[in-house]
Image (cartoon, rainbow, N blue to C red; front, side, top):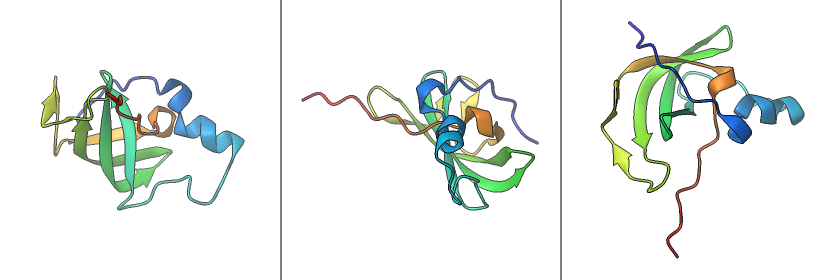
Length: 101
């Protein structure tokens, strides 16, 4: 069973927008790919098990606080290992952690 997730809007980090402007043969995920989304300000990495109808289906393999880069086991209702669906329009590039220097 897939866990329903209300993904954050990827904004300027949108993968779909990037590939619409600069298409290439690697834009579509495949089983084994790691894709990223944003959830409640954190970066979520998902290992793709299947890709259907412009949606990646897979397990959450990392939850990363965007500000500190710190990894978490859970954030609200989302946890490592959860199986989720991620539409292409919610995919996002990984945000860089804030540099304290």
